[in-house]
Amino acid sequence: MRITQSQGLIIIFVKSGYDETPLSRETVQNKVTVATVYGRSYYKIINALKLMDIQFESVSPEEAALSNAKIIITTRDEAEIVRRKDVLLDTELDDSPVFMKAKILRNIMGPYHDDQLTIGIDPGIRIGISVIFLHNEIESVVESSPESAIKLVSHLISRIRSNKKVVRIGNGNIVMATQIAMTLKTKFKELVDIEIVDEHGTSQPQNTEANRRGARDRASARTIALRNGKPFKSSSSSSSCISNGVIKST
Image (cartoon, one colour):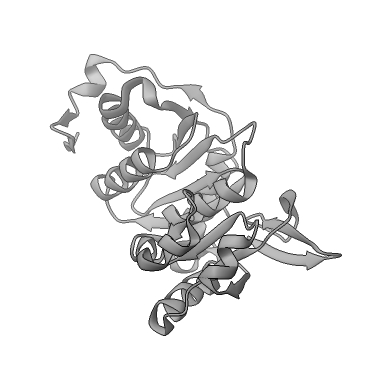
């Protein structure tokens, strides 16, 4: 995500996984506002925002209290000065950046007609995972086992507030795909829609630069997340592959 200023407005541009073409473009009236006079907390906040490629402005807590900023990040003590219900605390930055990104995006967008959370999974020896929220990719990682992938996706489903949550899993390794789908469906039931996606055309050529450091798996997961699949239907044969959330070898 890239935020720039033009004629007094803040323009949000979102990069796709393949080029600089914006996936969405929204105009808002305020930047992310950092409101603290504590040096250590200030550097902690701005370093996190820089890592997330989000621009910000710095003001005192007193100035923030009088502003119409949509997003204010401060300390717990100074939140008493700001007196805003939707203020974000610096302690939240100790958590995974993906959850802070989701909160910032939701605050920027406000009431939004489509706040679907979509998670794409590319099963295989390396499991690519792409997380798309409010038309922005907020996380892209590679996990080394189905169990670690399920744990991460479960955290994302549980902690990101969204009216609709969809997990799309590629069918390149149909056994692993079915096992992951069954575990998630058993755990979350109707809270999440799970789709099995045809992976044809999602993989990049073996000799491309994207093969480095799992980038190929992340790119495939992103493509899977953006492609409609067939609704997953659980079965007794699928459930037999799983015991207490642990995937059995088949």
